[in-house]
Each structure stands twice: as C-alpha cells, then as structure tokens.
Length: 456
Image (tube, rainbow, N blue to C red; front, side):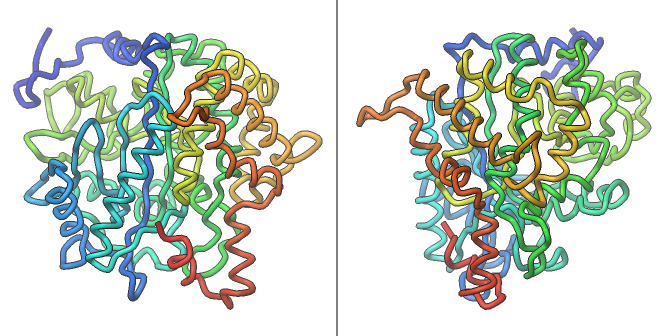
C-alpha cells in the first residue's frame, strides 16, 4: 500500500473501500466496550468575570503550563504555543474561545468516569486558585459578547473563523461561546452501530431538554433554554443536524462514508501546518484534484481529520459521539454518560429505548430538535410533552444501568448517577429555568451571580 512521505506512515487512500473499512475497524466485542467522556467549561477571571486570554499571568498558556508542571501532563506544542496536554489516554485541550476541555480516557464504568472528573476538577481548582481564575459549566457564555472572547492560537481555528460566516450566522458563536458534555460509546458490528445511531439520534433532543442550561446571551435572557443548541441550528447546514438518512433501510458504514465525502473540507494538515481547503471537496482530493495540493491524494490521517469537521447531533467515527447536551455542573458530567450507557450498553434497554421513538417521522424528529432549545421539557410530544418522554427514557436507562451491575467499592451500581436528571424530569424544571427564576428575583436582573454560584 502506498505511503505518503509528507504525513509519516499514514497510507494513501486508494479506494473508497478503505474508508468503509476504517469505520468497520471500530467494531469491538462487548467485553471491550468503553466510555469516553468529554466536557468543556468557560475559564474566567474571578475579579471581573472576563474570559481569560491566551497570553498573560492569568492566561490559558500559564494555566496549561502550570498543570503540566504540577501534575505531570505532557504539553503538545503548535507553532511554539502549548495548545493541549496529554496523560494516560486523557487530554486537556482548547476550544476556540479558550474553553477548557477534558477528553477522558476510555473507561469501563461511570464510577471511574466520575473519579476522573473529580481528579481533573481538583487539579484545575488548585491551579486556578493560585491564578485568580474560576471555571463555569453552562451551555453558552452568559455575559460576554462575541467580540469580547479571545481567540486561541490553533491553526485550524483560523481557517474555521474565516469560513463560518459564509455558511451560517452563528458559527462563530458556536466556536467562541458554547460548551458541552459529550460521551463516546462503542458498537460491536455494523448492525449494532445502526441501531445505536438511530436510537440515540432520535432521543438526542431529550438530552438537550434535560441538560438545558444556557438561557442567557449577552447578559440577558435569549428566549431559549438551550441557547447552545439553538446556535447549532444556524452554524453550517452541510455538517450539522439530525441526518435523516440514518433512518433509511440502506444505512450503514458505506452510507456514512458517502455523507462525509460530501461534507465540505476545512483543511489539510501537512508538515506541522494547516492548509486552507475550506469548502473544497474530499472527493476531488481523492482524485488528486484538490487545487491547494495539486496532484496529491489524501491519507488515512486526512480522513481521520476530516471526521472531526462534521457536527451532527450524533457523530460516527470509530465510535458514536452523543452531542446534544449543554455543559453543566459536575454532577451532570457524570450523569450524561450514565444516561447513554444505560440506554445503549444493555440489549434490553436498547430495544426499549428504540421502541419509544421508532415510529417517529422525519418531520417529527426535526420538530423535536427545533423546538426543544426554546421550550425544553415543555415541548409538545405526541399526546403529552418531552417531560413525559424524558421520564420514560430515564426509567429505561436506569434499568439498563442496573442490569449492567457495575458496582463501586461500597456495593452501589451506576444508577445513582441519574438522580440529578430524575429530579429535573420529575419537576419539569431545567437548570436554565432555575437560572431565569433567580435572574428575575434574587439576582435583580443580572447574570453575574451565575459565575459565582455555579463555578466548579
């Protein structure tokens, strides 16, 4: 097989079949399934609540270097700038507006996930305490305008920054002013992937509703309970959304390859630099017709990079990514993986979860996705509301977690990680609505208290 000299030992793509096999290689036996949790949070200076810049005594660079020195993280450098840290299959990385993200290691149970989150937040608190910085977990920056957010010095972000306004009105807000909690989960086969993809995609609006925690934009109510989710509706229609083709009979790895081949490119990474290929065709690249690299064909590394440039509500790589939830308080960082593990990692629970949504039409799924950012659990669903559906979903997830029987040292299974979500579903009151009530009463029409009362 041909190898590209410019990208190390990554094989050149010689056929579409290689792309299908790339996805197929993600299939794992159930005994090897893992849980990879990611969460982002906003860093701000404690005295004036401002987003922290990259440079400076209280900047992102100082924060990352301090984490690396004190807790033995390995820095990743791009053009002389530290842009990420790695350790033990984990990474700490930067979103475009300086949001700090932990991409967790592949773990076996939610107890381990919550331990990982606890350790990460403890390390951040220790470093941030010395710097006068705090971290906030919500879905959308509540106070500061787009122009107040400093850009991080990562090459791909410069390309995206230029391209986003050409394809949507809120893409820069997505980059600079949103944060999320995600979980990455495995599949055993193409058929298992298809069932999990369909079920999780149809139910993603339920997660959006339960985790809604972003009712403020520019210091005032936005009219949405999840402003973050609304941002994604006007970011880039070519790479976002509910992917109706996933529910077609012909769906599988091959169909997702065709989808990704039609997603416009952002960049090609060569010799430590990002080459701007925004809006260009990966199909042309495969034919050696990419004008920014004339005659060159992509490698499997290029394909892997391209996978990171699509942003549907559920994303397929060599695993499935759940992408519907706002960032939130630390208990929710444990609750999000618990919700989806309970639904997708037990066969009976997966069947029951699919039964809840298998008869929905394309139009009904789109309506849920479009309405939930504004009305969350109060959104109409069949003869009731999304609150009713959320209760059913949580009951199924709880059964799935109980059936897994993954115990901690005290003999408790993973079901208690759902408690914060069960409280939301039972009351019908999201964290966003809690914020709004306080805004109208004890906060006296200011969003500033959210930074103090809900910081990690």
